Length: 262
Ligand code: GLP
Figure 1 (cartoon, helix red, strand yellow):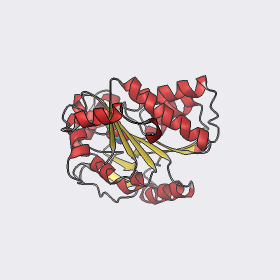
Figure 2 (tube, helix red, strand yellow):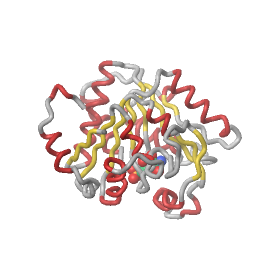
Figure 3 (tube, helix red, strand yellow):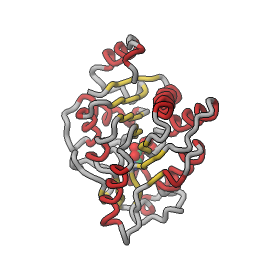
Figure 4 (tube, rainbow, N blue to C red):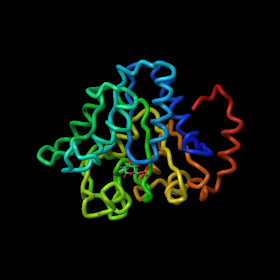
């Protein structure tokens, strides 16, 4: 079972992530970060950028692999995940852009792009720390409900719900939201050595309850985290509001010995 940490704010969650990454970079300067888009990781990236600057952390060798990309969307489009990762992670942290990879959503090559991406991750030695958001339907990356829990990086069809959720990035016009994507599979994500999933707000409460306390099922792709030996789920009170064991998670975190780490 993942460790569930209930925090007061996104900043507090961001601090925990930033600390984990800073420790990782100190131990392994060329570590591989798994990167995610969406609003949930933004405070975490900001806190990490503050920490990198304040402590003059050398990030020149840090490598990165993003989770997903829209199919057929120009990478230069402001809402492509390539642009989003550049804007929210690469630039604020000062990463070397040549070391940060995003799945290639170009339609001409997309059939082989998934296998090539998984190969590139494996050749980099695997992802050390993967940050994750979660969709309101329990998706991670773009692995919609019904995705194989062993899947590799591949093309997926977005659900209507995900396109409605993401229309806010496309002038609130669902017709502009691509219908397909290329996403790391759940099998790919599970190979990362540490998973940190962030979720905030009441809109995520059902997905978080299913992820942490429901059965393991492809209907809630994030429930695959229950199979992972090192998964940390950091959520606010609203996202935690439907958890049966919330009091236990709070108690365990408040009494956590320092030696246990995150
Ligand atoms: C998109 C991304 C996911 C992300 C999800 C939730 O669908 N592909 O990686 O977790 O949005 O986004 P948000 O954090 O904005 O709620």
